[in-house]
Image (cartoon, one colour):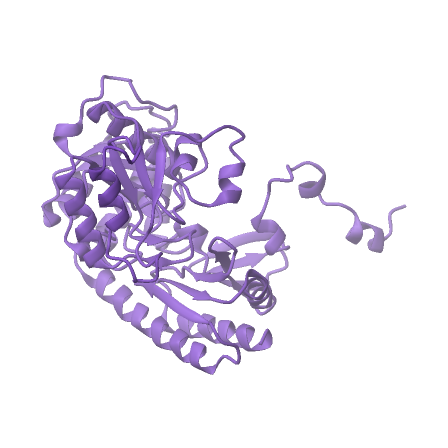
Length: 425
């Protein structure tokens, strides 16, 4: 007979059956059972305040009631669940709503492509299209960038550990310094401009440049609006397409629906995923200028590019949150609230080198090393708060609270973070 002690220490099915590749469950060693709003609950009913939000996939919180009602009604009516790229009422409703709530108010000309259900699918489509349109191969990306885990996306990603997982050479990509990478001592794009203008540089004329306005996985590195405008101008002058990867920072994370709106630029191609469905359902978009829409039918496809339940929740999210500017204003106000709290925490910390940075409701707290950042996240978990680290050495504690979190929930999470930082000092 198995004793209770033996049962408690026996390997779980996650350990015996699931691959060693699992990661988040190692940082948060509980079994989650349900989730509502800004909280997850384990199987014993213990609540955890969620400042991770599905890595940015749950901007509107867990099981948002407005989105859930729309999804349940659709499923109860036997709505199409799998449609490839067939025309469906769910897709039509989404396209019409996206046009009227997002594209037209911003005077954005984009065609909408459904490349597959994940962010890296959208990035692969963007890279493929840029090469098809220009007839050129090289794509320029930036230091500390992260664009996904498939081969094309890894080629334009900076993180050495993630790149090493490819197992093959990652070609046709060149990295350039991101904003502030050289400490502000070098004029913007000096090196890039020099290579482009020198026939002896060895840099083939790029098809495109791909950039995140805020590098989430790279450590919450925030590009200045001025830097982004200069990059857009450089791309225009040098005949390179500009791709903005808004997979994590889009859908309101920085305040505006698109993170590039603050800079006043119009990229040639934009990638969206994560919170575009609003409910955590797989969905991705590749937005492109009409003149770039040179695809032949079926030239880029995928079995799950027509996730109709995701279209339903995406439409509900746009209707509920983007018909006016209330969510934007609330996000910016709460972002200022987070900034004040983090700057105060940096000033109180007993160690040097702690810094805060971010935009809207994406923030990072940088420590001197990854060990302390990990210790802060571990202590926060013990106190009931979910946080993750980012940055090339895991040295940044990353905050991604739901945009729908209440002021009390924000204060609660920031209080737990402060206690965790002081506990590790």
